[in-house]
Length: 376
Image (cartoon, rainbow, N blue to C red; front, side):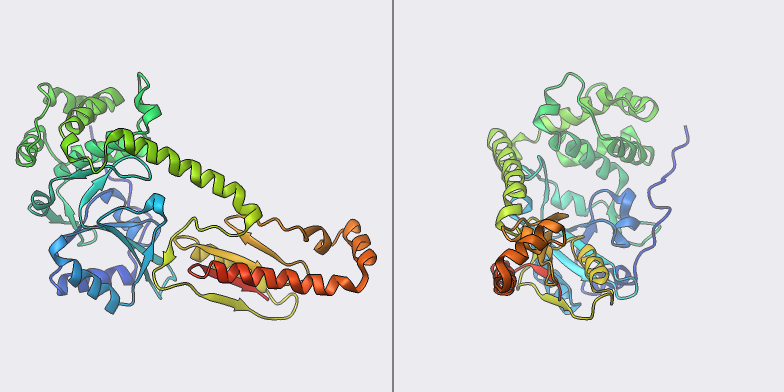
């Protein structure tokens, strides 16, 4: 059976990613793109995260290198923030794309919003690094990445899905795993497992062939759970606590999404470590302010917390595709009911309009660490 890599056909690495690679090599920093390397070119174009594993002893050199290159450290919210993991944002001036470096100083994975498992293979990982033929980036050998992916498949499995008799594996993970296995052999995987201190299933050769040919979930999960069970001593937090935290974070996110429509913008995305900026667009009616503001908003919200403050005749705040509800909304609409209200209150309308805009500015001050776009 012929298996080809279809992941990286339509993407082109940015100039900034090429420069980043050169600078990391020049500063003799030990690093690798440690997972999802079937999508590496997509990451290098800025369409998805760059998941870098940096050797902990080189952390200071790495941070100094990024700072010198103009990268900005960004802060994740509690539900996407983990020990020994940090985020940096770079900018490619040729395309305007943002490069998000999801930087790990440990191999950490696990349940959503918690990442409860540390993989104890840091030294072994850096002993099995190769250069990606298409990009020149250091990546793990396919066999090593496949072992890590087996563990990740079960570690990331939602608790409700685990309880099913036939848990579902996302198709893209199956596709990625099959591709990696096609680049290695059962003998090589077994040798790597011995180096990692992992036992392999008795029927491993049979499972290996079954996954390549049939791509059955039960074959994949059989190996995944066998590896995962051996890693319980390396939990960052107990499983029950991790599940509870994950559920609480999900509940907090959902409740905040509802309450934010009444209380004002809420921090759902990442923020700049040293505070955000206010970008104001000023111009006459019909000059394209709103269009440009929304374009900038869409660009920033790829990775940053950003909100749209409109200061025209009908002032409003737009946050994460939702308009914030205000008690004065009825007054500032352009329908007949609003026109009647304006006539009833007379000149009081203008102080109320000013007061609404002042309230919006207060919201902006409250959310100072955010990036905010204002259309004046």
